Length: 364
Ligand SMILES: Cc1cc2nc3c(=O)[nH]c(=O)nc-3n(C[C@H](O)[C@H](O)[C@H](O)COP(=O)(O)O)c2cc1C
Ligand SMILES: C=C(O[C@@H]1CC(C(=O)O)=C[C@@H](OP(=O)(O)O)[C@H]1O)C(=O)O
Image (cartoon, rainbow, N blue to C red):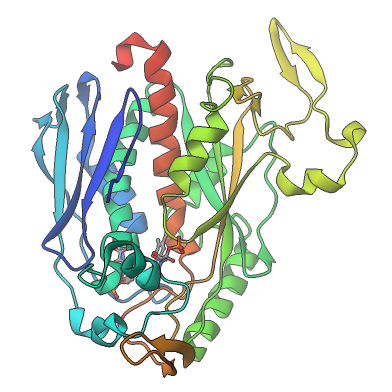
């Protein structure tokens, strides 16, 4: 299983949900940057499991142990390697799933690809547990980008059918987004947060799950980042974002709403702001031709409902080759989108840092 991405900043993740540890290696980070470990840990806490009633009850502290590349909290320029020990595996919960695959998890396809010895306890290497190392690498990338004046924040644009207040795509209020980052339901509109809490608790009680849409915004990017035709900002973001489990779609700016609209409604008119070319709207989401135009990068990420639900489901017994009913155990998120906001921020930061490394010699 190959798990790596990046050109100037190369990231790989390793481990399995119920193995000894998970971790990552990041090559190409610059030398001599101080990393604020408290800030990094606070970022990891936003994703960590078992922190409130809206999440999986598996508790992991998710404290990374740095093996190389960080000396006295300073990046040393050599490959950054780290691991996070797993401490709360309940592997017995997965015994029946060796024979009866969970609908819409990776149990069946992993077995088709790798055979019946594949370790799928807790989702194995396919598990969202592997998003913790992404957040370690991405949390560091966010700190490096912040020093270049680049900010990345996300919110839950939608959970089930409940929609958050829209953001201004030309002048997003990044402080407001930063303020809600540690909310268990990262929505700007407090009344919608309450509605989502009720929905998620109701679904949890019923043994069901729901999906959502995360919107991530990056500001402070220079115009001119990205390459045609297969190596643009959208291309590389989509490749890495689809590496996050449960992602089913990525769109930019006006997204799919533009498909049924008119050009006269959607085109972003150019205008001068002093000596800078800008646009009056930002339906392009800050990207045209795969290249940044200097406007905020705006991206929506569609997330499916958690596949592991506690309702009885139809599946098959692989050994008996017959249809059967499945009831699962384990500790699962009723809505994975809630914990995925920092994950999408993290991978966005890694991809953007990778592009900036091409043009910014300080970041090499
Ligand atoms: C933050 C996060 C938490 C997740 N938690 C769970 C979970 O508790 N139970 C589960 O079945 N799937 C969970 N998933 C999703 C599965 O890992 C994912 O659906 C599965 O690996 C199959 O991959 P696919 O949905 O991309 O096809 C989570 C995903 C994310 C991003
Ligand atoms: C452990 C994490 O999330 C896990 C992601 C996950 C899955 O199928 O993706 C299934 C569950 O695993 P388990 O049954 O072992 O508790 C979640 O708890 C984590 O995010 O750190």
